[in-house]
Length: 159
Image 1 (cartoon, rainbow, N blue to C red):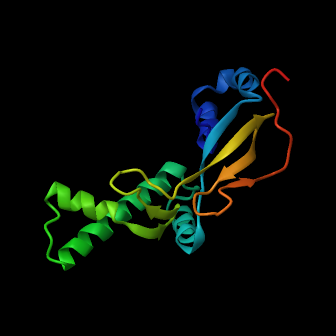
Image 2: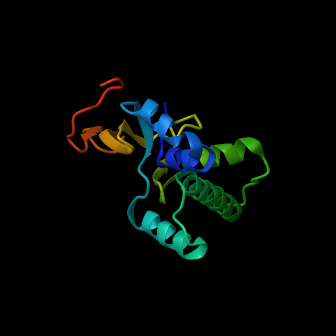
């Protein structure tokens, strides 16, 4: 199951009266979280600009929307410069799939012939006593691919 930092915000907002019971049920859950949250200069700039503009931290999905809009803008600008027609679905799709740049969420690149982002990692997490403990991180750009995180024992549901 996907469990993200926004999961707790959602519970706080919509299920405040049941929060304690929900967190008890979630204790020991193993899940996935989006990774990385911000990467490099582009990510740090996005985070600072978002905080300055709106007065609160960005959401993970907001960061992905930012990268998606940047991808479209960059692709259409490139096609226009080359005299290509971005109104043609196949040409636009092929140009989008050819993307290879560093966005706020890290490397934006797609697996050949697909719409699947190939350089996209995630964290395997354990939800313990109201906190997310990263068990391992998957980074497709790291030669080791799986990185041990916090070296804490896994707590299983019911323990």
